[in-house]
Structure formats: C-alpha cells, structure tokens
Length: 564
Image (cartoon, rainbow, N blue to C red; front, side, top):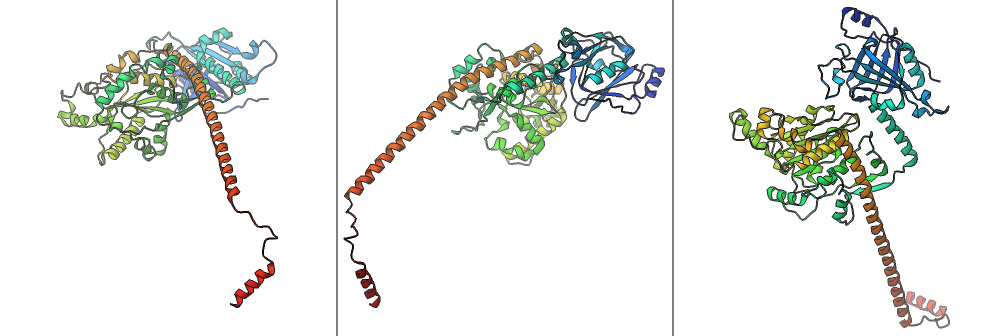
C-alpha cells in the first residue's frame, strides 16, 4: 500500500497581477506535493523530474519540471484561470475488475488562460498568435498511482471536473497518449520480440544495386537521396583536385541492425544511433568516400570528441586518409540529454579566403560577396542544445586538423572566420521526433551539396541564409516526418529480406566450400597413405629374433672394445 508523504516546503513565490494576489500566494505553504510520470504543456512533453504542488486551500498549484539537466522551471497557475478541467482514470473506465498496474492511467487535463503570472504564452503552438489572450493552453498531468490522483482531486475543489472519455484523450493530451502507447508497445516487445539479427549494412556481400533501387522505388526520401549519384560523383572528381588518387579503399563502418532497432521506427519512439547511422550510410552508399564533397561522421564521433578530447578522434581522419578541408560539407549528428541535433560544417577549405576578406577593408569588400563562405550550420528541432558550445568545440577540432595536415601552428578557425549560423528551419511539434528531423536535415543538405549553401554576403548582411530557408528541400512539415519514419521502417524490412537471401546463399557457398575442402583433404590423406604403403613394400624385411646374433657375442665385442 502506498501512503502519501507530506512534504513541508518553502512558500510558493509567484508573480501575480495584483498586490493582494501576490500576498496571498507568498503566505500559503503547500504540503501537497505529487510526483508525476510525465506532463504536457501545450506541445511540450516533459518526463524528467516533474511534479505538481497544490496549495492547501485548493486555489492555486505549481508545476515543476526540468528543461534539461541543470535548468529547472516552474509554472504557477490559479484555479480561477482554468476554463475546463477533465479527468481520466483507467480504473473507472475498465471493463473488468482486474487491473494491470503498469497499464493504469490517471490523468488530469486542464485548459488554462495564459497570463503574466503563469507565463504560458511560450508554450503555445507556433501557428497561434502570441498577442491573443483568448487562446488557451492545454496542460496534462499523468499521476503515478490512483492514490496520488484521488488525493490531488480532493484538494482540487474550487472547480467542477468532467470525466474524459478515451476518444477525447487524443484531443487533450496527444503527447502523453503517444508515450503511453509507446511504453505499452515496449513492454509487449520485450515479451514477443527476440533481438535477432535483422541486417548488416552496407551489405557485406556482392549485391545487385537494382535490388536496392527496387526496395525504395515507391518511397520518397529513400529514393530521391541517391538520384543522379553517378553524375554527381563524376563532377566531384573533376572539382576535387586536392584528393590524391589511391588504389586502396577506405575502411567501411558496418552497422549491425537488430529487430529491437527496427521497432524504434514506430510512431512515438526515439530513433537510436544505429538507425541514424543507417540513414546516413544509405544516403552516401554510392559515393566515393575519398573523392566525395560530403563527409558524414557517425553518431559517436562528436560524443568521443566532447568526452575524450581532440586526441581521441585523430585516427578517425588520419587512418582513413580523410582531408576534411577538401570537403564542401561535413555532417555531425549530435546526441546529448536524450535529444538529437545536427551540426554541418560548410566550406572549411575556404578559410583562407575568409581571413583575406577580414583583413581587406574590415571585411566589407564587394569582391567576395558572391563567393561561398565557411560557416557552421546548427539545426536543432527543439533548440535544446547549446549551439555556442558545439561551435566552439568544432573550431578546436578544425584547428587541430589544420595543424596536423599542414604541419603548422596557425589556428585560422575563429568565430570571425567561420561564424555560427542558425537558419530558420522546420521544428518538431512533439517530444520524440528529434532523430527523424536530424535525418531529414541531413537529407536536405545532401541534396543541396552541389549548390552554394552560404556566401560571404549572407554572413555580412545576416539575411538568414535564404538559400537554405527558401530551398525546396527544407520545405517539409510533420506529415513528411511521419512519412520518413514509416518509409525507413519499410526500407529496413525490404533490405532485411534481401540480406537474409544473400546470407543464405553465402552460407550455402561456404558450406559447399567446406565440403569440398574436406573431400580434398580426404583424397590427399588417401594418396599419402597409398604412397607410404608402396614405400613400405620396397623396404628390406626386418630380421627376426632367430636371425639376430647371440647376445654373448655382442657383449664380448663390447668388452674387447673397452680393452682396446
């Protein structure tokens, strides 16, 4: 049995509309603190250290949660600002008397008018007007158990509540409902899905490229990302004269994709590093890794750089003979605090032109305005990562590579020569599609790799980089994100069928080769045995014991030898 814990905390400090309200808020202590499984405010879903604190008089409450690891946030609301309050309990809506505690759901859904006191304007949808005070914000609270839920509702006596039906949950708390369904699918997968090998990519066997094209022929992004690859490759080889020809092939990073990885393509799931690396490998599978103008590092590159330092990533480029300054586009997927973002380093090889421009007339020369410029693009669908910290670390890495390749102590990469740019690109409207947005951002940049991305005039005029903002490749919305997630799941299924076929054929060939080797060894052993038998036939016979000289003669001869 769970017992309620009364926690005496400091008085709630809230800025209110009037002096009387301010006095009332600051004088009231609240012993009613309830931990939440998760909460939703507008389009934002929070699952980290979230709780709700109710005033003892039932007239106001405060929601507490963590924006990230080090940033707490509080939202205080008055009961009189609530226009509606609906509740849902899976126990009351259950058709049987048996209850599964893991599947029990206890929700309180409220629509609150934004005021200066609660500061809920920031949680409105992007398409809503920030000046309209009549647009309400939906708040959803998911309690851990029925006791906390019922105790909260007992103190919540200043407003009438209505029962919420299951069909209305999608309207009021779609983010919470999606995560509840996702958790339920995870529990069912643990019972039903074995973590069997699904696919190894790139395919480690000799394969037919037409089969891969057939696998994505009815799809959008998976098919379009590799269109005109042959022509683009030829153009890249002509332009990149700095790439030295070599007969050695670069090392290939093979991905092992399992059933559990593929299950993350379902709606409401977070993409993991395996799926994001798969998408990047799929995009560039036909590119010459050394001659291509695009370099995509795995999801572990930036994590290693951030956690272990510059020396830990030297081999990532040195051993593979990668000259990052011959690349037009370097793509770095970034993961931190359960969130994905994308960093793209554009034109790092043009750093000397940037230095020249800065030294000439304080960077206001019109000669370079139309030329492509080096910059660091940062694309974050939730704006949750520290872009300045990421850009600083990227500059340190670029300076380290510059000194290693050019054998110099000069560090040309500075915030002035390679600035940080954050163009206005589509952002997510839920709490779980950040990985899919990273894949879609990378797809758009990869499709634009043969066009100017950033020019010196864009940086000087700070015009928001219209080449990216207005590009057709960046014209997408949540419907396209959902489609990409679905197509990625379908692509993995089709590639898995082809991979399993190739694997069976390779295993059969290996089996026949083993049989052939065993037969060859058996034949060789028989020939050797026959040869030994023939050699034994021509040897003189071994004398019998009767034909051996007497033992006393041998002893006598030995004694005579000793006497001599």
